[in-house]
Length: 268
Image (cartoon, rainbow, N blue to C red; front, side, top):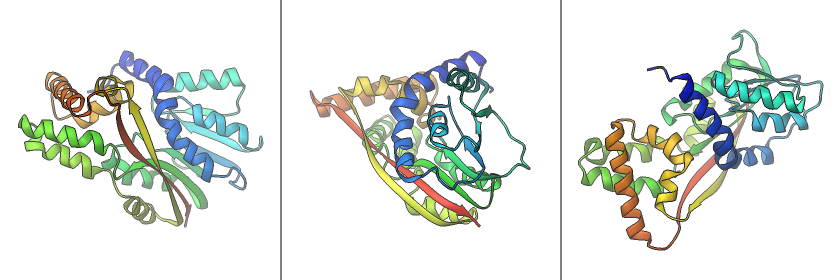
């Protein structure tokens, strides 16, 4: 079912206000440490640019002669990104699609919200957009991410006989590829000189209630993790998981970790 414009508008707003500073920046900090703006060629493409925060910051570091094209995931995010660019007078062309015949000297991409099962095809799409010898850099969560949450989620699903006796939760745990698997996907897509960098990012909340009700978890991850359940059962699972976590942790804060991984590579 196609998502309504009002929902897309709300998600774009939440993406800009909460997700980019609280989630995306964990990955872009890693990007900024290991991707240098020098010698990247004349034409740059940024895929999954969201509401434009990182590509706008990147634009400031690049030579003014470099052309930057950025793809936003939908029209609502496009509006926000273009508005920011206009205010900053930034030389970036924001779009929602590109000419497939156009190739770029460098392609950068945010894969932090790409579903694990879609990552391989996403990397192949990067390969289609970069020139031979061109640079690709993308960031994504890898194996070990959200493990603290998934262990409690498995317990609830198993006890409530949901998701094939917890099999769905087990699939969540194993869905995120290892760093070596992402490197292999990148190699299979036609890249060489592959280098990976990983940072263990800690997300801390005062308790499970704050975590499960956060925009990041409630609006962007729970609908994906528990997509096999209807809305009522999904809410019930979240409530039970919150109770179990709070019983285990008491007055202590709740933390979960995410393995943020950056891949740099060259197109053969």
